[in-house]
Length: 221
Image (cartoon, rainbow, N blue to C red):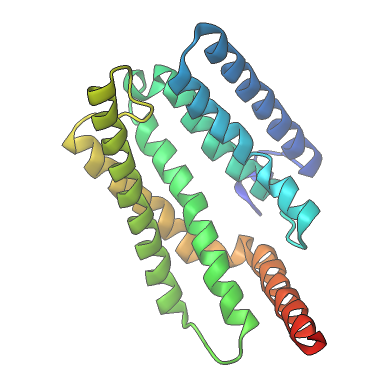
């Protein structure tokens, strides 16, 4: 049983929660646009766009996600957008929780991809220990890249003027971010097989369809 199911949320209720969070994100974007706060528009607009990616994947590919996974992704980006309103500084541990949840989504992408390659090709086999370490390193690399981007936007705002789109709050903030990123990574690396098997299967099948299409094109030349 998943965490949302323990809360008594069925699939229909999970979908309703996702829609409610999307409406709130639309409201944040509208508020930021009205106030002329470009940074907040970006920090809420990008998460809003991410919430529609599962539906786009299901429409354009054979990859489908259960409502619980969609809620997981939506909740992660929603926390980031709300944090950009100033909650990061005012609520203790909010930043750490947001990083752990968002990094778990990044870890899920890495986990599903490497497992899909494992299922897709008989030429390679990835032991569970390798997948575990890969997910941790994948999230660590993404986290370091994100911190570099935050640092770069801070430098750019100092040169060009205005407020940084992505803010850093000192060295301790960076360390806490990277540590809690790994918390999310460990959770997915340890238990991803129980919740991401469907996505892994669909992604592997999509790889097979792409290979078949490429072979057909080459044989027709």
